[in-house]
Image (cartoon, rainbow over all chains, first blue to last red):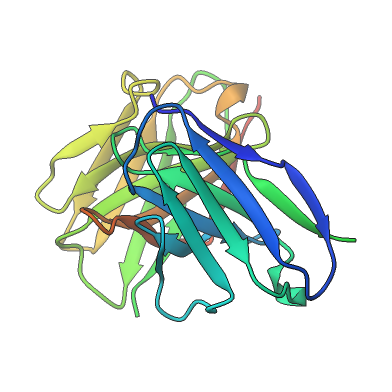
Length: 107
Length: 119
């Protein structure tokens, strides 16, 4: 299985901050990566797929980059609604695997 | 738009079979991979497997010996059976639709259902 490692596991930030979350794959996954946002008690919601393609209806404050084994999710100008846990997920091969999550908290 | 809803018992005894159903509304079960995922504090998000509307399946090797996913296109439902459950199978179970291919992603998801394995 391809292992996905996210860092940091927790991130404290303020409204208006620029936030960057990193996801590393245990082997090259080209650009076959998606990012999800999950709020307490809710299912994950897709933000980005193919590493950098923004899902329709998702705020343009979210952006993704990277290829191969290293990827980043950037949130430009953090808003109150963005405090949540974020997960990366590879889809180069099955089984699909997820990162351990990054919780973005209010500083 | 397409919506998914999980249903099934919230409590299952150890060694018994966990059975869940996902009902798809707002669209038909076709041309996607219909997927089960679970989430537990200990193991995070874990992909269980998918079924294509034709009935072909793909399971996580870690669960393959215990998992069966089936589809009933006439009812617009797909189902999960997990046999010989233990406390380690306690989790929130989600169904989701996978748009496969270059632009693969899981969307939408059901709201999730908590299944507790306990006597």
